[in-house]
Each structure stands twice: as C-alpha cells, then as structure tokens.
Length: 172
Image 1 (cartoon, one colour):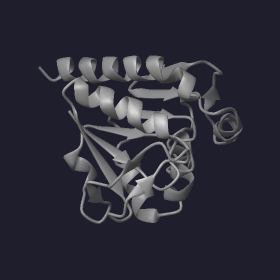
Image 2 (tube, one colour):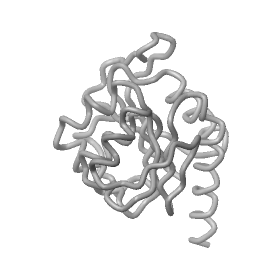
Image 3 (cartoon, one colour):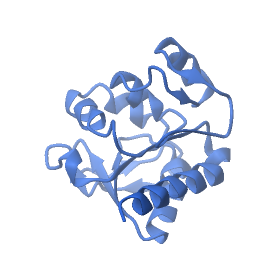
C-alpha cells in the first residue's frame, strides 16, 4: 500500500519514526508530504525528515491510506485549506492518527459519530466535534485507528497494520 503522511515542523518524533519504519518494514511505501520541501524537525529534535512531495504535487487518489503523527504538526497543517481538502479525500480509506493527529480530522469535519481517542486535551475537542471518545491505548472504528500518545505506539502500529492487511485481503 501507498500511505500518505502529512507532516509539518514540530511533529512528535517517535509518533512519526516508529510507525514510518514499521510500515516500511512491512512492505508499504510511506510518502512524507509537506507544505514545501524544507527539512522538518521533530519537537524533541531527535528526528528530522525532508518531505518527499508537497501538497501542490500530490492527489489523494494516489494513496491507499493516511497516517497522521501527532505533536505540533497537525495543528499547523489544519490551517491550510489544501491540506484539509487532501485529508477529506481519505473519508473512505484507512486513516491512522495518533496523539494530536485527530486535530486534522476535526478541521476536515470527519469525526462526528466516530468512536476515537487522542491526546487528553484533544479528547475534549473530539467530544465537542461530535465524536464518541474512549480513553484507551488504541480505538478502531471501521478503518479509522486512533491512539493517545507515544506509549501506545506498539498497539497503534499493530492495529494499523491489521487494517491494512484486512483491506488488502478484501481487494483480492
């Protein structure tokens, strides 16, 4: 599968790196998409990455799934109309969002009626936007996988890979 990863400065280092590496190790292509091609640094300065493509150069139809790491990145990205439009195009595809990642989904009006989790302060925003919130390590609602924090990464990646595998099997 080809997985889109929208990213901006201040992403949560481990919430990007751990899933990115594990998705790739499982044979999936992860494409980092930025507002431009300038090098991005994680909020803890442990990770840096240069986007593979920009939002001006991609179309959501080129991807099979969406992966949104947390940190400050989702809040920055949701202020950009082209990013919100890109995210909206994944409404019928697998979406994996951790920590502050669901902020992008809130702005794209994609959480109403969904069962989700997120970082504790984002849980309030999810409730206010009409989501049913559970304070659990990982919550799966159809093809939407959400988690709260870096300590939940193992469960988050495992469940995300299960969704990818189930989706691939459904297309056989």
